[in-house]
Image (tube, rainbow, N blue to C red; front, side, top):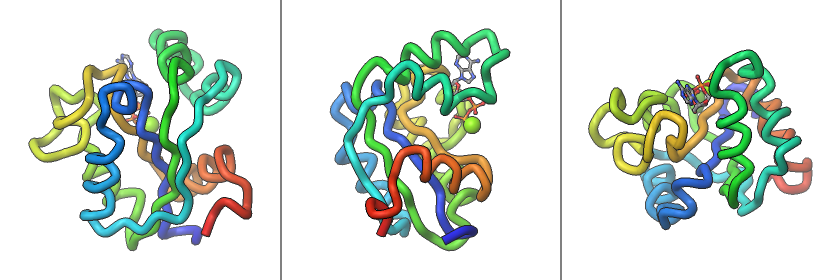
Length: 139
Ligand code: DAT
Ligand code: MG
């Protein structure tokens, strides 16, 4: 599973805006297989840990508050070249810069509330998947 998986979250904005079904369909239609899937919510401590790498950035506090503000959908996805292909499907971090047809272009509210997360490397995909799911929740 090491090089063919990525980890995603449908973030609190997109869940609150009613986009879970549409986003899961875009992911499935793009050829990703669901290896794990759940509706959950991050505590403030979870969000701090998940985004630790951004701790020095000016938006860290806002990011932690937002990501723990409501339910999310967490998923592990499988496909050849999963990390890179999923980053293409979601589009640029800022929806204003995202290409037409990408998930962020269609559903993100702003750069901070940008609808979905996608892992940035194979190594982080595995770390993030294991942060959210136990071994018996990944198929
Ligand atoms: P990505 O989610 O595209 O990998 P990132 O890792 O650089 O982007 O940042 C993580 C999250 O932090 C991003 O999804 C939303 C938030 N963020 C990034 N840049 C921001 C900014 N300039 N203002 C507010 N939030 C920002
Ligand atoms: Mg990132």
